[in-house]
Length: 268
View 1 (cartoon, rainbow, N blue to C red):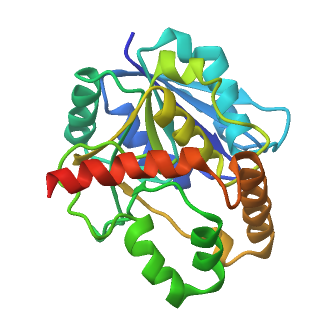
View 2: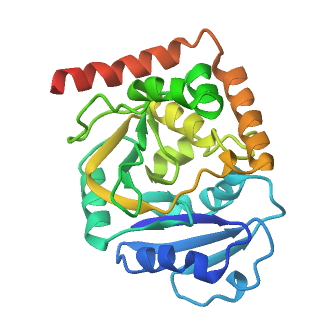
């Protein structure tokens, strides 16, 4: 049945999205690319390509909400379902390596190495965050640099496939049956933290694998660091996340993080 991809768009022009669409549409195993419009695009509804399907959501109710529309409607028609940001580009052979690896495994979620355009690592493989990790990253950059050595797994040479509890949400390749079993994203998060939540639920029940032998480029900017509205959304999502999983006591987080660190220590 191949691969289905969903992209949530919000005020994205065609020129914004074209590099990502070109990458996706060049892959033979991708049978459908779903554009979920959380706004009112002036081009996407009339964009014509045999692989592209357009869905107009009822409103801008969040990243997870938008992707869930596509998941619920189409995921059962595919072997794998890719949650893709509208700012990703990649080489077809890199994507094939990731998919071939995923086909050989039983876990539910896979992530390649994520880089900036200059090749710098974005550290998409991460431990599950504590409240201190997140708030230090926003409000105390110098202290955050020390915490990030562990949180972003910078102390380890991630050169082989390995279990990681938090895989960044910009390019999440799911086994479709697993994504449906997890009921997709928790739509209580409007923006930010929904990928941490879904990733940890998958890690606990089905398993996650970081696959650094393939890579994609994420043309990423930390919007919440520059925009007060996005910052407010980020803080709200963090509040919701830690209310759900625990602020000071989160035994599940400790267990999943320990599993990741133990595996990496064995590979040293």
